[in-house]
Image 1 (cartoon, rainbow, N blue to C red):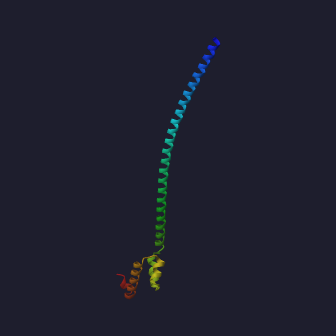
Image 2 (image 1 turned 90 degrees about the vertical axis):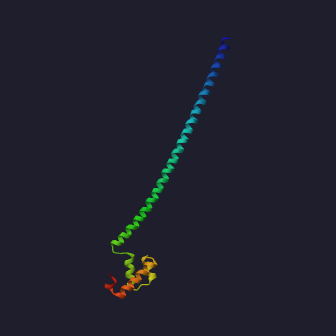
Image 3 (image 1 turned 120 degrees about the vertical axis):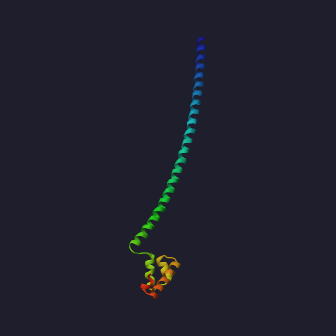
Length: 135
């Protein structure tokens, strides 16, 4: 009977240990899932922050490219001016040589009203002479 009682105690102890192990396992699983939720939440926050930062960087990059393009255009114009070239100088030269108005517009990249005004001024200066046209 002592052996039977010893076996019952051992079985009860094993049952208790199995139950205790199950409770510990369930608690550990709960903690792991809780940590997973926290990690997923933090990961989503970091993703959104990264997306926001990336979008901002792209916007700044595009704006920087636009500004650089404008700057290059302005530098080219400044260089032309420093070298004594302007579309109006070329237009004046072409009108003096008797070029057609549409050729002046295409070559110099000026508008039709500008070209017509320059043509009118050129004719007026031709009529009045170089000293009378410049007052």
